[in-house]
Amino acid sequence: MRRSPARRVLVAAAVVVGALVAPVVTASPASATDYPTWQDVQNAKGNEAAKAAEVQTVQAALQSAQAEAATKSQAALDASAKATAAEADLSEATQTATSLQAQADQAAATAERAQTRAGQLAANLYRDGSTDQMTTRIATAKDPSQLLYQLGAMDQLSTTWDGVLDEASVAAKTASSLHDQATRAERERASLAAAAEQRSSEAAAAQKTADAAVASTQQHSNELYAQLASLQDTTAATEQQYEVGQAVAAQAAEQARLAQAAAAAAARTHTPSTSDTSYPSTDGVTVDPAGAKAYARSVLGNYGWGDDQYGCLVSLWTQESGWRANALNSSSGAYGIPQALPASKLAAAGADWRTNQNTQINWGLAYIKSSYGSPCGAWNHEMSVNPHWY
Image 1 (cartoon, one colour):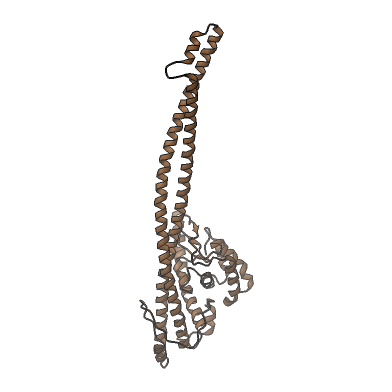
Image 2 (image 1 turned 30 degrees about the vertical axis):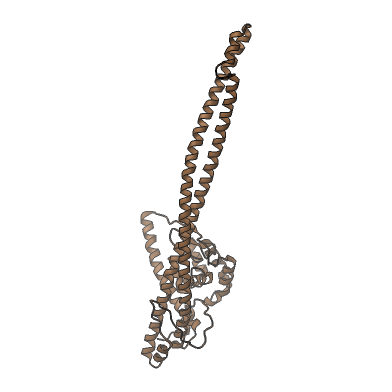
């Protein structure tokens, strides 16, 4: 069924497809998706019913390919978040172990000084192990004032002696306790280091799998959009814009329904929403807030918006993500510059949604167009609800 040019413009998603020329049959790698061939497309052109059926077949293949890549990219995102959390745990444990070891060393030094002082006092109190020097002085004193002085000195030394011994004992016990704590902390640090290494390895493997899936999906998506263009007598860019717009509109409708249900549930339970934004590993992710803003500004016209909408968009996504492509709300799972929830919704705009900020922006602008009409409409809604969301 043909779509009017006016409707295509209304659902534009501003996604630029790489140069696609004459259809070329390419070999497809083993995949769960059964890709239509160019011969299938050519055979369907002679009959309207066959053409409509082939359009549905191509669309289904496109959705299947995107879903397959989205699953692997989501797995890579989850693995990256776990690796980042493991690194944070390791960093905290390392600081704890280092601090406890420093405290233990300090307490040991204090105990050693106390023991040294006790030894010096012992030297003053006793000449050797059998002769009591102070007692001898008292026994031989002939002047009563001298006797009182010697008795007072002995009492003072004894009191000091007792204090130094107590100090040495406390310091030794403290040093022993801190040493035990430092030993346990080091074992915990070593365990977390192993866990962090494992998480990092898993994240790298997941990213490699996702990258391969994204590359394959992008290749097939380009060809599938070209096939749609051939069937509809349009361009691949127009077909991609339409398909992205349709997908995002469906997502927005579902999200609005879920948001209303969540708001109603929160009102009943009086449980406020929480926001805990983290930034998983940026390996392979383009994190360039200034560049992202520049790109977003450059494509506003594709949605029928003027530059007057740019300020609202900047405010909206500054609050949502700081314009960082790797922004992840660890509480909800919302991801990317527009904070798509769930993150895999971004796949509607391109298989590289996890790493490409422009793809995220394309999805976000299509979502704003479908749900609020304009960035200022979205920003006004964001500010009208608490906690803020759009």
